[in-house]
Image 1 (cartoon, rainbow, N blue to C red):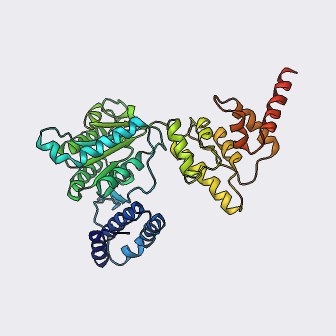
Image 2 (spheres, rainbow, N blue to C red):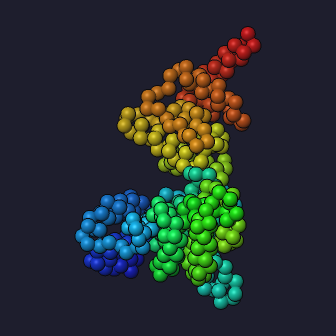
Image 3 (spheres, rainbow, N blue to C red):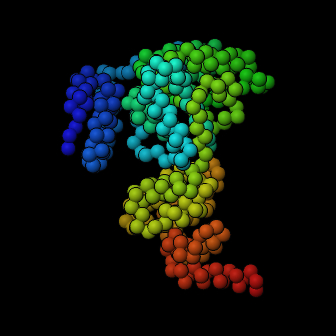
Amino acid sequence: MTVDSRNVIELADAALAADYTRVRRAANQIARGLSAAGEDAAARELRSVVRRRGVPLRASGYMETVPVDAKSRLPLLEEKPWAEEPLFLNEEANQAFDDFVRAARHIDELSARGLASRLGLLLFGPPGTGKTLMAAHVAAQLSRPFYVARLDAVISSLLGDTAKNVRTIFDFVPSRNAVLLLDEMDAVAKLRDDRHELGELKRVVNTVIQGLDSLDHHTVVIAATNHPHLLDPAIWRRFPYKIDLGNPDAGVRENLWRYFLFEDHDEHNVSEPLAAVSPHLSGADIEAISLTARRHAVLDSRPLDLASVAFAVVESRAGKTALPQSGELSAARKRTLALQLNTQDHLSGANISRLIGVTRQTVYGYLKQDEEVRHG
């Protein structure tokens, strides 16, 4: 295995300087190299060490200098680590993501030919669809620091200070060659013709627009919102790249189940049927259900209970995720679950039997009994 010597030297230099930001960045680069060389366990351990030791390093005297709100003294920005978990996107979103990263990597070449546009990416879609994760992946792909604006600090009780905080953020980020995520963008960039908003809040929107206009072509700004219809049209125009992150399609859902529930080893071949019955779930929902089921399996010293997973899926609603229960489902609940799953399109009796852990004959018995009751 070969580790890039430059990253090792950078790691040592940063550690001696007690510079946690550089330590984490260099360690993550080394971890990526380890993963590429097949040393996944070592990569995970290195990342874990960096996360665990970050606070003592700060306590030794290093504090990153980030702008703060003048009144509350809360930091306006927080540096976040690069993403460790993979990004699962449908084909259209993945193409848009690749286009944006490619443009950012070759911005000087594009500028020299007069073809560069601002590196602004607008992400919109329901909660839990991966907007923050995508922004972290952009930073990782570009090997840049990743800052997230803290809206609790940016939006001051004194409205004039909110505009001032916005200007401070746009002044700071270019100096760090960083990726900036403006999460919940609608909170500071609402429609200026909204009659319910005060004039001062409308001036905050103008400040955001002016801040975006002040950035050069090298600065990467990503805005994310769950409510794109609330954004001022001028904000839309200042983000040349846009990605609509709706709930994952069937192929992405299958990959999500395989990764989070089975760690890419789906011996039961149920990722596809789980994808078929979960069109209403976001990526975050699938992750939460999967990890809960795996925790129960470890704590109860038993195999994964797929029936509890399937029951959580059918019981989940938009904005309200049901989680798997710890104990095994009762026979009565399995029967109810079989009937619920049977209403799903393209779900065979064999798939239902695998999901709830009973034989196909038992499933057909449930269905036959229900048919007799309904027509008896």
